[in-house]
Length: 340
Image (tube, rainbow, N blue to C red; front, side, top):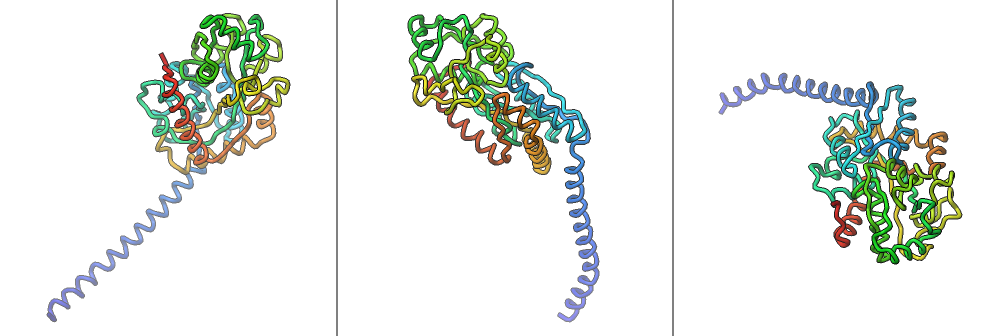
C-alpha cells in the first residue's frame, strides 16, 4: 500500500504541470477565439456585399432594395450591389440566396411571397424558413387596386359587377404565380364570387408597364412603384387593400369600405441571409440596417413612396414569417390555389 501511494504521488507530480499547461493553452485559445469573433464583426464588411432581389428591375422590391443599398454603401464605405434574379415567382432568386456562402456577404430583400407563400405553391429545392435566416423586416407596403383608365369602373363594386356580367373576360396582371399580387386577387375572388383571368409576369415592373399600356385591365400591387403612375393619371387607384386608407391617397377607400367587409391584404419587404450565417454577423447587419432606416433622409423617402418602416429584431421578423406562412398555407390549401 505504501509503494502504491508513493507511485500515485509521483504520477500526480508529473501530470499536474501538464494539466496546468493545458488549462493555460485552453484559456488562451478561448480568448483568441473571442477576440477573432469580435474582430470579424467589427471588420464586417471589408468587401462588397451582394443584395439579391428575386424580381426584375423596376418593381417595389427593387426600388426599396436600391434605396437601402445606397445608405448601407455610405455607412460601410463598401459597395452594396443589387442583383436582380427574377423568375418563377421569386423562387429562383430565393434559392440562390439560400445556397450562398453564409458569411453575410450575400443577403436578400425578401417579400411575403418569397418567405411565406411560395413554399405552399411550388415544389422548391429549399425551405425558406429553414434555409434562410431573418435579419430585419424593412418595410410594410401599402397595396392598391389599380385599373387601366380605359376600364369603365370607378370603384370595387363596379369592378365586381362588371366581372359578374362577363365572367373571366377581365384580366389582371401579377408579379408571377404565387406572388403577393396574385394571392391578393385570389383572395378577392374567393370573397366576392368573381372570376378574373390571370396574366402572370416575371415581376411587378413588367406587370405595371403592361397595365399602363392597356394589355391587361387591372392588378393589385404596391404603391412603391405605382404611385407615380397614379399621380400622372396613367393608372386609377380605386381601393387600398390594407385595414386603413393610405395617407398618400386619403381619398381612396379600402376594399373593406368598398363593400367587401373583412378583406385585408398587406405586404412586406425584409432582409434575410443564408442559414448558418454567424449570429454576430446577423447582429451586425441588423444593427446597421436599423440604423440607416432610422435616418431621416431614407426614412422620409420610403414613407413618401408608401412604405412604412418597421426595422424590427431578427426574432420578431422570424415570428412574422412563421405566422404569415401558417396563415397563407391555410388560405392556399382551403382555396385550392395552384401555381400552374
